[in-house]
Length: 333
Image 1 (cartoon, rainbow, N blue to C red):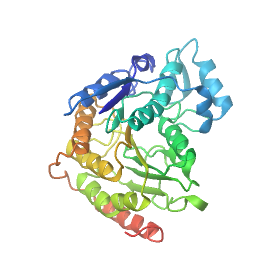
Image 2 (cartoon, helix red, strand yellow; image 1 turned 120 degrees about the vertical axis):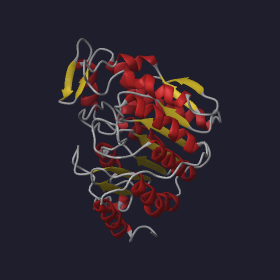
Image 3 (tube, rainbow, N blue to C red; image 1 turned 45 degrees about the vertical axis):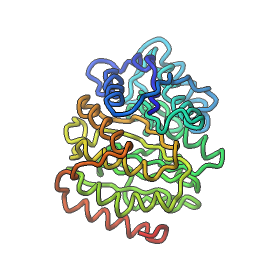
Image 4 (tube, one colour; image 1 turned 60 degrees about the horizontal axis):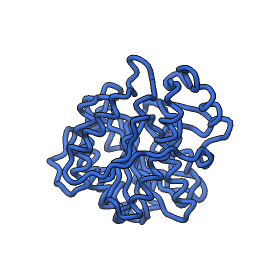
């Protein structure tokens, strides 16, 4: 297991009481170290700021650098940043590129990026939802520009609106999200399937409150895993958010550790050898996140999960039927 992180990310100061706090980093690292197997530690490098231009507008990048230099500011109503945030964000964006290099060199089988600030809401021209730069989209864009087919699986409880928008028309990037709906940020309805050459490559399982592991297991079996298999990715990148846990304070999903273990096993099965990278996104109950990360890595390591949890509302099952209807023209489901 490649663990990519950096202590500079502790200095991204979101202020008192903000849920995306520095303690999350330590909890994530503990979760990785509690898993079986050896851990290879890598310090996340700062990304060359010019590489941010693959996803973000130059004026926005410069605004983040300038406005956060001297004091804490609000980049949007949910997204504070301060003097330590610029370096933290550059290292969070650089972590994926470092992971690609180390996996290509055979230093590990899979990479977990314990990073903050998170990224999947960061739009080309503005911060959003705790996110400054779209870490996973930057890595996916660079891989796709090299000719790779990239699958992004986003199991954060909030829809990755910015990641979807980045690749909505892209024929080489599959974006597949499981998220609570209707909910922040308001996007990701099941009928959003991609545009033009990207048609069929945006897959949204937009589920109601209290959706549990029984639905997630069925959704992976009937839709997620078959689509990943048919797409035949060269790389699988995961927006690994843990705010879908039943104990998380910011959402109303009903997942438990065993459900993340199931999903970990599924993405490992879909990825070629040494081509799986997990990017930390949300997760705001520290204990639940720590245990769920350990469970994810157990699934990746091949440990069989216990029976999936909970009984999902009837509306969730209707969403799965709607998704299969929406994607029947693109995939064999």
